[in-house]
Image (cartoon, rainbow, N blue to C red; front, side, top):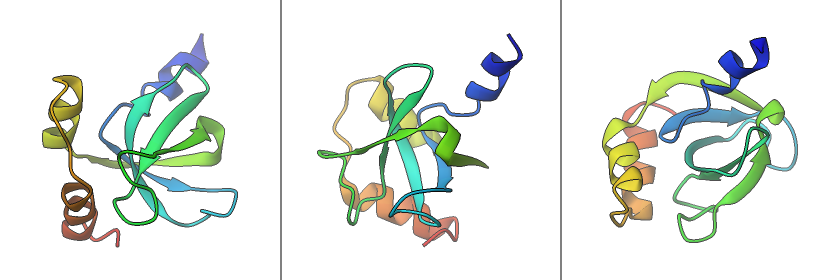
Length: 95
């Protein structure tokens, strides 16, 4: 049960850093949740919102920032643009 609290950090809109794989050290925004183990990531440059990266949660480090406007747009089914993702990461100092 204590694992559930850890997974709550990985909500849609959360900024994360990849800890493993070819994307190690890069920052992304969670744009989808597949299950308790996998999320979908985009950064607006090499990983677009139309072709997000599927990644295991255990290979990610959650950052304290959540992009609420993007989270709300995704949850409402509205279109999100790669430029919005890029600008959000840049404004928070992640790119």
